[in-house]
Length: 441
DNA sequence: GCGATCAGAT
DNA sequence: CACATCTGATCGC
Image 1 (tube, rainbow, N blue to C red):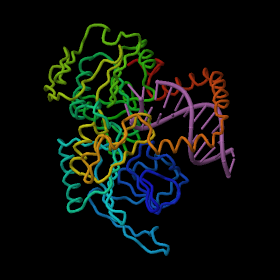
Image 2: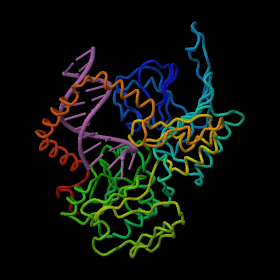
Image 3: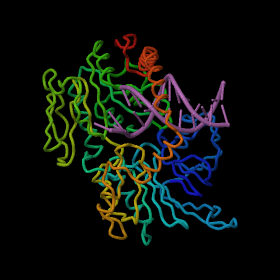
Image 4: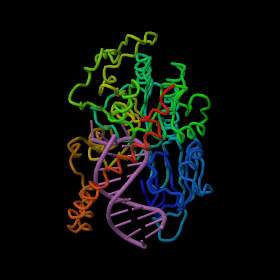
């Protein structure tokens, strides 16, 4: 959101106050060490991580705010010609996404708005119940005029279990391969609880790459994570270095299983269709109950039956995908909208080609009017704002873009060898361990 | 040369 | 598909 007064996860000119929901890169585009456009509000945890993400950033711009408190700000009102002041109140709320992630509830002359940032709404966890009470309490007697919603999985086909259930699946996969190395794909922030759970249940340390260990230390984790490969067979590696190619390379040296925790349904099979056919079938997946059994992991409790959830999948000979997501699934989004009954909803994800306007599915749940599917465009069709964007683009591009594209392709061909080598070196450094120096214990 | 932005990759 | 990330190329100053 970007108004004349405030911006949430937008860092351009023209706002008087800036709000950061969390430190994932897609929410910090435009932030840089030299950024100094105004006060930047963020959670305490984000503030702790901030210097490592933006070394040299002027930290005096940061305004640390805590979940559950109301804050007020005095801003210049853009609506009146004279520079009159207007007051804005806001409350940060736990977003249950990655460490430090918050939502922001605003009240001001523009009405009442909630910005979820990226969030997960698992209503059954204790932490979520507290968050729910806090939110309902803050919203009592006020109608929510606008909900800016994390619409990443805003489609009924996105259905997955709680992170607790998914974490059990991950542990069981690892336990069923007692002699294998395990690599788990993670990002620069997020999924720490999954790793901590694995560590606790299996009584094993988790390897992470050096920068990630720094982050873990800043987050207060002490003895769970290590950068010494000899101490553990379980490694968390960057998602961008996790691929079929990587796993195949690792398996030349040591038997290794890759686990991809993701809310995305990786239904498409690759690799010539030999998915699910490799070796003896160690894991049996029960799709009806989202429970499963393994011949090696025996101590686990049965997973909660959840008819709507996906189970993990054997995506490839060496790779499992597990539906562990830090974003809300469709059912959770629906619960959230039903609870808040906002007058209007806008998705925060608008660039992705498959993103969906939440009003298509949730319009009928909104507090006003008779918004319905009929009034809102179907998923996948082009919206007015996209058409505008396309028009602006093509008018500035003025027809020579195809020529440019061709040139780029030529250069790319030339550069391929170099690119490949660099990226393999990087993967080695970051723990993909394609070389054996590090590999033998 | 530097930062911002885009395209392409996993 | 693209959750988030990185890299290299390109654009604009």
